[in-house]
Structure formats: structure tokens, C-alpha cells
Amino acid sequence: MSSKPTAKARPTSDAPVVVIGDAIVTELRETEARGGLTSRSYVSGSALNVAMALARLGVPVALISSIGDDADGRRIRDHLGKRGIHFAPSVSLAGTGRALGEPADGEPLYTFDDAARARRIRFDDEQVALIRAAPFVAISGFAFDDKKQHRRLLEAVIRPQERLLLDPNPRLGLVDDPVAFLDNFERHVSSALFAHLSDNDADLLLEAPLDEATSDMLDLGATHVIATEGNRGGRWVNRAGIDVAEPIVELPGDIVDTMGAGDAVFATAVASIVQGGVPHQVADARRILKRAMTVAAATVRVTGSFLAADDDLPPAADAL
View 1 (cartoon, rainbow, N blue to C red):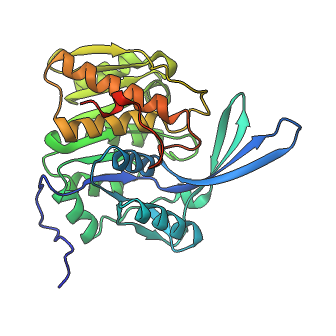
View 2 (cartoon, rainbow, N blue to C red):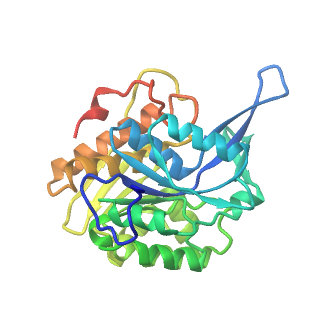
């Protein structure tokens, strides 16, 4: 008899947190000191990064993404399986998405292939059952500009005010219709428990300063918002009047790259909510925010876009 949950499942505290969004393979080209290019590839995608970080922080997690029945798809399956992350993919005939990062003024400039742009999650019975059983549902790197996927997500997440955690994470080259993306994202924000917004998100989606965009998210109905601004740190605000800020955290070692920093912040906030609940006091919000800044600081000091199982977490990252 199958142990797969049915589509009628309801949220339970012992079910895994579900992360929905991108899982791809990224090839990063780097300029060598003596000239020429070298390249390396690794599994990535914002949702995969978030799932990896949640697992590293001790949160049981399941990932729903679109991949192909190909070598890259098998690589992603194997990577997640070795880390105990349940994977419920939609298999795409377009194949597994790939991103190519090339050096540009110190930060990689990414282009995405046709398979990455064709990302489609079907919301089949297994996926919907996982979503409905999950205590929390985290969205990162989702095709909000796809009307069908947007509607199916609305239908799948019951009681979003208590469970829905959002990061728009729009990427140039992946968003076909920015207006539809923003409209549909705002529809989900209006009933979300929590949302993460970066300064890049605010600029790309809203063409507005981060503070203004953060206020807009609260006005729309998000209960809590974490706003991050690169090396200027982050801010946690909510509809009850909490408003705290924390600078970036200085850790030993050089910054390798900034890939995955925003995903680390979002994942750490999600982990803190799962493990300790949403903050009701200023001190609680500050503790979560500092933890998020610490995990992000550790992430940018390792190669790749997430902390691996054998990467050390600073002590503050374990504090709730």
C-alpha cells in the first residue's frame, strides 16, 4: 500500500516544509589570473538553495520543482537524495534548466536557456498533497507570470495567512511578463504570513526604493516582511508595529561570492518561523534577523550558493 499522502491532506506539524520553485544547474565561468576562462558547474536554483539551507538548519523539507529526464535532472535528484530532501518534481519535456554565469564587474551576469524559461510545475496529486499537509509552504523562484501556475498555487495553499512564506526572486531573463508577475505575486502577498524582499526585487518589480516597496507589501496584507539591502544589512517589519534593523555580520575569512545570500536570508527566516514561531516582540524579530544575517555571511564565504552539510555554521546561526 502506498504511503503517499492524498490530495485531501491537511496541514500537520510533523510533515515537511514544502519549498516550491526553481531547481537548475548553473555553469559559472571565471577569469583566471593569467588570462582565459575556467568553468565549474553545480546544482542551484533559488528554491533548491532554500531547501538545502533549511535541511542544513535542521528543518525537514520537501522540494517541488521542474526538471527534465536527463543527466542534469538525475544530478539534481541524486544531490537532494543524499541530503535527505524529499523531491517531488514535475518532469519537463524541455529538459532541466541551465544558467550560464559570466564575469561582469565582479559579479556574474546570468543567462538562462530555453528549458529554464519553460519552467512548469503541474501541481499533480502528490505535489498538492505535500503542499496541503505541510505546516508551511515557502515559495522562491516561482513563475508568477504564468496564469495557470499562479491559479493552481492559489488553489493548493489553504490557510495562506498561517502558512505561506514568499520570496519573489525575479531574475532577468526568466520573467516573460513583469506586469503579470507583479500582479500575481501581489495577489499571493495579500494573504501571506511572511515575505522577503531585496533591494534588487524592489527595483526590478516595483521600480521603487526598498523602504517604499516594503511598506507596499505590508499595505497589501503581508503580516511580516524582511527587507534586505546587500552589504547594508536587513530589516524586519510587521503589521503590528515591529520595525528592527541589523547590519551585515562580519565573520572570519574572505567573501568568495555573493551567490545565495538572499536565499540564505529567506531560508533562515523560514527556519526560525518553523522552529520558534513568528516574532511577537522586538527582541524576537531582532534575534531572527541577526540569525539570518549570520547564515548569509557564512554562505558568501563558501563556494556555491548554499551551505553544504560539512560547512561550519557560526554559533549565532543556531540561536533561536
